[in-house]
Length: 169
Image 1 (cartoon, rainbow, N blue to C red):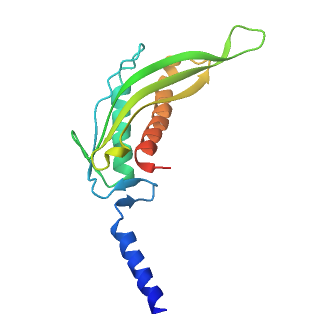
Image 2 (image 1 turned 135 degrees about the vertical axis):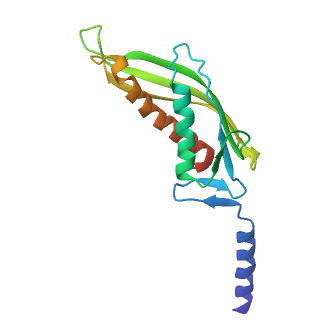
Image 3 (image 1 turned 90 degrees about the vertical axis):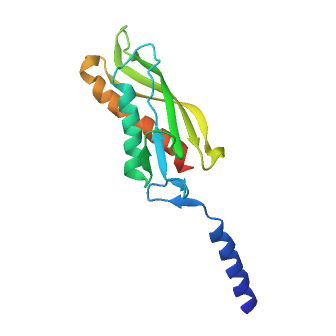
């Protein structure tokens, strides 16, 4: 019995000494050594430009990390770093109505290319494209619903980025 207790103690010592990950209630898995996060501007390179989108994305990503992690937001060179480019911003008709050339709905799509650098665990770094959309009725004026659509899509994009960077699911 004493022999098994020693084995268990040795296993527990090795298991706890190798832990380098900090778990939170959000499911985020962030290295304990990471203390800061930086989010750069997202230049808008899409053919159609929403002048507020770059700032909206950057602030939403910063807010996500402020609200759901203990990381401090810094201007540059964080332990976790995000930079990106807006590559797509377009609206197009969807769900063409039977017997008509009119669309029942339109779809706004936003695509961004994101580069994530994890200076603590470089193997977790990535560069990938994220795309999300939201649909609206074709009888609505795009300018009237644009801000709400952008907000909805931004929430989805930020969730995707956050999950890929720190939620390891």
